[in-house]
Image 1 (cartoon, rainbow, N blue to C red):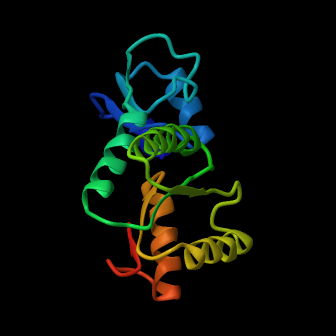
Image 2: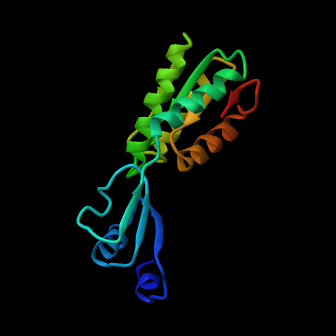
Length: 168
């Protein structure tokens, strides 16, 4: 990525929060116009010019997810699956807060799952156990797309996806 950036020819860059330190270091030192989408400025803390930040209302995203799931009908439980790696941890925790607030305001049951070692073998086993022990039918929201792929993989292995089991 950095080599591509160094080659030039760009009018500007639109990026999400950078997970690769080398990329964020390069963009911090460069003066090419930059728009960063995300929730925190910490990805390039020293850059002071030619940068704009777009902040999403992460709690509102969680509330809207819960609002949609609660509108679908009678689920026995609503769950939130947190993602705790890198930049996504912060946005996932805000989405979880909004999700919980909305579900609790409806007087409904909710649960959550999260592990600091997303995707490792222990996490996969614990995630599968969490999913298999949920009362059916259950409605779930996941903190970010990357984690959603892991959840879908677990549901596939368990053969527990679809309206009778889990709505994601």
